[in-house]
Amino acid sequence: MRLFRCLAAAAALISLTFFCGAAAAQRSEPTVYIVKKGDTLWGLSERFMKDPHYWPDLWARNPDKVLNPHFIFPGQTLKIYPDRIEVVAVKKEASAQPAAEKTAEAPKAATAAPSVIPEVQEQVVEERRFTVNGGEGFIAGADFKPVGLVIAGQHNRQIFAADDLIYTDIGRGQKGKVGDRFTAFKRHSAISHPVSNQILGYKVVPLGVIQLTEMAEKSSKAIITETFLEIEPGALLLPYASRKKEVVLKAPEADLSGYIVETRSGIQAIAAGDIAYIDLGERQGAKPGNVLYVVRNAKVDINYFSRSDYDLPVDVIGALVIVESAEYTSTALVIKSIDTIYKGDRLEMKKGR
Image 1 (cartoon, helix red, strand yellow):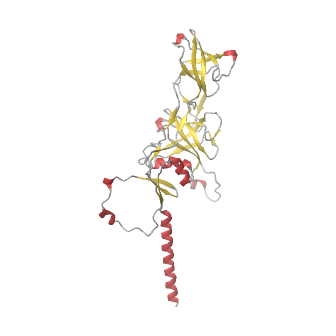
Image 2 (cartoon, one colour):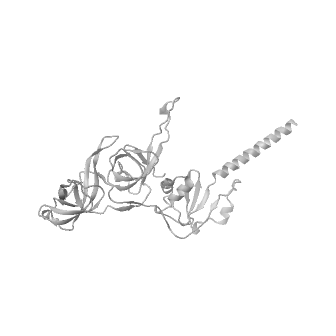
Image 3 (tube, rainbow, N blue to C red):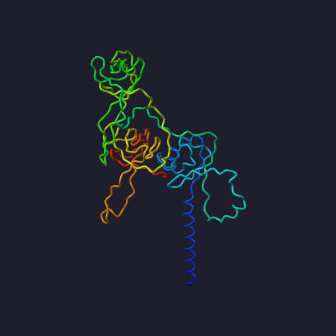
């Protein structure tokens, strides 16, 4: 009787082990989803990962399968795992395996087949885009050389807005003529790196656009046609060039790691929708469209162990997209913030992430 009980217990243990193994295998099977018309990386990330800003990871993980970061295509297959989304490469007919090879494969463990949500369309689905109006500003070096100044305004006013009349020091002697357009800028004080204290350049912010209406030999009258901020006497003038553009999202070609060194507003704390200047430029591989995560070291109390023994994962507190890059610095738009972002916060994005 005792032997029978032992055998029964062993059989139950084996059955339980097999059941648990099968259940674990079933949980590891992905949900298979077929992209349909109207889907976006943004929406799918929110639907399956509960985070609409997961899409940079989805794009960066699959650059050879999502060839254009603007678009995903109806008919593309996605595998949804608990911690990631993978894009299944489309197999060409010529590369299909012979039937003999398929039958020679080892039998798989008894698991439930992946759930499939099928629907195939034939139209391209457009992904979310980021448009900037040209008033974001940048960090300038010694090569920033204005061609003129705003010297005064009508009625001795000191602050000017759209449709106001102003005077400049650009005249016929400087080859100015009626109809010429210029962008007015304000150059702020020098920017020092929050870690190294190295001077990176000067913050330069566009204020608006003016057009010359009357000419004198050494001066001119102009009308303000567009403003981003108030224009004041002393504003610097450069020949007009449209800075409005649409940012094309793209995965980084190299690992990026840097810092927020300044903000457009000049305040220390920023959030989604604000502009930041960073210490990554074209020399480091940063390009418009690259997305960077704002990260911060985890703040926890480790009472019983040496803090140096542990390399804790960083906290991701936001994300930003580069909208304009220079040689050593870039301008970026904050697209997500789950906590207050500060000047000096660290940025990173891995090439294969």
